Amino acid sequence: MALTGLEVFKLLPNTNCRECGFATCLAFAMRLAAKKIEAEECPYLSEEAKEILGASAVPPIRLVEIKSGDKSVKIGEELVMFRHEKKFFHQTAFSVCIDDSEDEREITEKLEKIKKINFERAGEILKLDLIAVKDTSGDKQKFCKTINLIKNFIDLPLILFSENPEIVTVGLEEIPDDKPLIYSANNENWEKMTELAKKYNASLAITAEDGLKGLSELSERIKNKGFENIVLNPKCRSLTEILTNYTLIRRLSLENNYRNLGYPIILYLENEDNFINSAVGICKYASIVVFNDVNDWEYLPLLTLRQNIFSDPQKPLQVEPGIYKVGEPDESSPVFVTTNFSLTYFIVSTEIEGAGFSGHLIITDAEGLSVLSAWSAGKFSGEIVGKFVINSGIENNISHRNIIIPGYVAVISGELEDSLPGWNVYVGPQEASDIPSYLKEVWSKEN
Image (cartoon, rainbow, N blue to C red; front, side, top):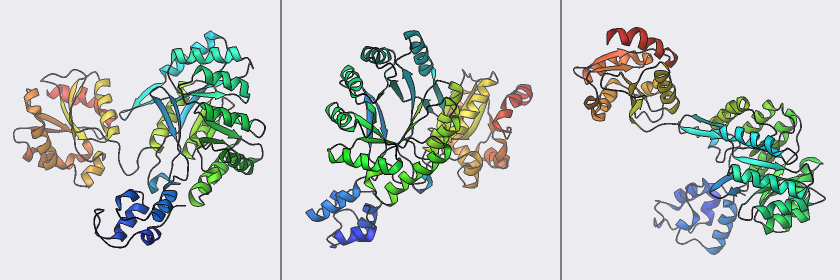
């Protein structure tokens, strides 16, 4: 169970020796309780204290890794109920189910679609993470053939989807160097499945028909066998069940330190029409979502939702400050300036290029804030922008001295002109979507 700062303080030598880098033992205790430092940084900690602090440092939700070659998916190890309290660490992994009863052409077409689900947003590539190989044929050869077909086509970690230990065994033998997830163990097969997971260094999803009580009892039995790389499947069907049970699991793990449910959760969407359920699963603690079909129109909003939920709320997405080329700009191309908030950069650059123009885009350091927020915080003033433009060396790449600023901060135009002697400051549109018309109707006529 996590200890408070005062509880940690009682375990320290209380000498205020400062050898740890802190002025007092209390300051060290507060940082240690917040998991900002390691207990070993105190040189005089007793063995008993180390043991107690070590036990309290174990994450309330176990970290589980699913791996294939250098592709790794880590789930679990979360510390908070709500992202604004700190942040979420390991984003929900997306998986598509490949049925071994499908013929080779159907499987190949599905894999082609999976490969094409690859979107760039705010500087991050959004894509699928896992492939689930589902045993519906009951045929060992078909299961192995499907695994090999997938592995030869795309290198992603696998979920071996079968409740038959014999089928799972031959599947594991096909990928001896991987760390797949076995789905799933139940009250009938759990002993054999646990042995397989231990032998092949795999992780194990567990299911129970009698709700969270059954899951808790089964995880305890498996844990007593010396195995803990467990993933929970509460087998929720309705939106209400997902919301209720997943929240209960998270709350019991974090707030009550209930170790029997302190594991990642997998959500298997058995029906194709489960867009809302998957969205709720992403928001409410599902570590893996398994889809039955491949619909890129469905994944784009879900991947975007995932990116938003798992970004650090205290650290805006940002790009490196500097000069960025949009298209193939020359010395007569327009010069834009904006902040280094990632979405601002990508939206502005997309609109410039979409208008059929090339340009120089100067990205100033505004600590990842949007234009209005940066201006309000004093991080996007005329003086700051002017100094950045001069230091950027853009003058060496252009034949004119014209710069376009965002319309929302027209108020800085006068100060910017004072900071950039000899330059003309143009006030651009407020909305990035109006950049194409601005370039055609204003910039082109005056330049």
